[in-house]
Image (cartoon, rainbow, N blue to C red; front, top):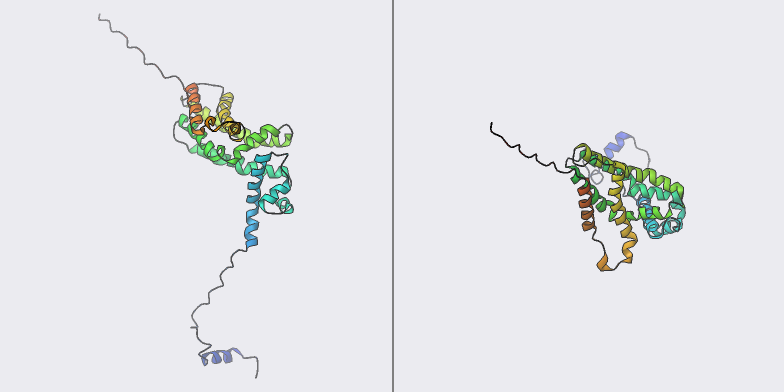
Length: 255
């Protein structure tokens, strides 16, 4: 029997064999479904985020100097060689952690500043409490403490932190204060040092979270919400322009 059949013969054969011709000729054949991503592929995509999370944990727990890259890799569940595929050194890993958790958010925060429609005292309140919600109450608030303790030993990282965190953070606070002064809601002030006054309670609360608070009994612990409200009250009472006193009516003297 010949193994080769021309097109006409094949058509005739199919038409005369109903077992084979079970599907209408007009029914399209669905394309094969795409295969689900393999576990290995999903794992590869997740690795940078897992490495950054593990690095943040260890940097905050142990400090920069004491953290070893093999510990980070082990906590993330990968090999040290895999870590170096994504980050060339421990210094680059630390920079990536800072960008992921702090400096990479300044564009978003400045955009919120541009769109804010309330008063400047309300903006300052929003600044303090959103900082606490997004950063201060998280493990990333341990990064400022780490930099305070290790900046002298790692000047290159200190310069990086100053350029990508401190300067943009100061500039954002200064913009808020300048807005208040320009609108007559805050009195005239030295904007640079005014920004330090706003940042000081934020840094203190971060330090309390990761150092000072661990030395205190349960009864002596700070309530972050009450602390920020008290600081805000003190700042606004110092910043707010004094209310204008109504001028006394002039006495009418009959002629």
